[in-house]
Amino acid sequence: MEFEIRPYHNTDLSSIYRICLLTGFNGEDATPFLNDPDLVGHLFAAPYAIFEPSLCFVLTIHSKPCGYVLGTSDSIMFSDICEKKWFPELRKRYHLPNKEDDTLENNFLRYLHSKQTQFKWTEDYPAHLHIDILPLAQKKGYGSKLITVFIKQLNYLNVKGVHLVVGKKNQNAIGFYKKVGFQQLKELEESIVFGKKL
Ligand SMILES: CC(C)(COP(=O)(O)OP(=O)(O)OC[C@H]1O[C@@H](n2cnc3c(N)ncnc32)[C@H](O)[C@@H]1OP(=O)(O)O)[C@@H](O)C(=O)NCCC(=O)NCCS
Image (cartoon, rainbow, N blue to C red; front, side, top):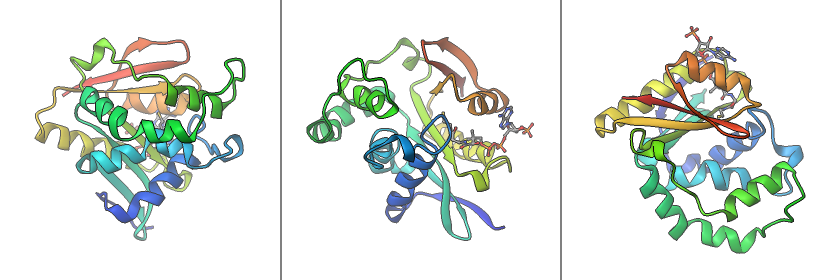
């Protein structure tokens, strides 16, 4: 099979949404849990591709996207952009659910409606990333290669560190991040923050 890693192109956007959906439930398909299949991509993938395209790389198989790594070099700046140009429109479209209703979709909606707070690790680890690969391309070394390409770009931009947040239930991703050199920075209620100095 012919895999390739290349920079993001605008025509990849719908594939980015699709891959995000198919890996959006602790690394597995989120489709059964969402009324709107676009929601997860709106939150965790599309704004990066749109506002930071130079930090978005796509894994393809026979030229078709099957994975990506994307993120930002400056989490505070990125959060400001999303607060101004991305979340307001989505907040009109998706309403804040009842507090007690603890479904995946409602957790995403609560995330959308919460003002993104900046944590202390953004000082030493200003960048953050998301990586998602479809099952057909997993465990072949491409996750590690995507991280390398992303970090190379951060080095080029003189960024001093990168962090990410992973759900505690996603043990595969946790094992992967440790293997590719990320250190645990903080344990939160349902997730873990990992970081890597560059
Ligand atoms: C997590 C993910 C990005 C890993 O990518 P991958 O291509 O499967 O991983 P690789 O094949 O590049 O593995 C790189 C190294 O990590 C190790 N690794 C991968 N998965 C692992 C696991 N579950 N436990 C321990 N180590 C693991 C590999 O053994 C390999 O080590 P090696 O270099 O010594 O051989 C990918 O599986 C994925 O996208 N999963 C679904 C979406 C997801 O969970 N995204 C993360 C959301 S936070």
